Length: 97
Image (cartoon, rainbow, N blue to C red; front, side):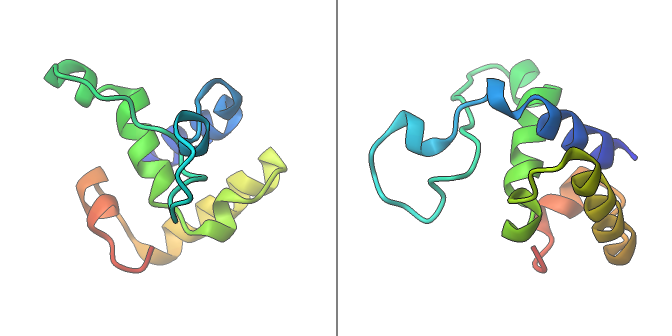
């Protein structure tokens, strides 16, 4: 539920977070991922925003490209149920993403 809620929150407020191509002009494979701001404190590194961006960036491309919020929620829920991921660490290390 935690991962699902964070991903839905970020999708809803995605326009407030910059993408990598907005930060630099390099043509990389991750240019459409959300930009993770550099932080020196553990408190910010473990914050909902920072952790959420990492989780969101690990989603499959086809899920990130869904524009409709309700459809996004439905697809992410199905993805999480089918892959049985229980912790944020498991999600970040999941090879199927």
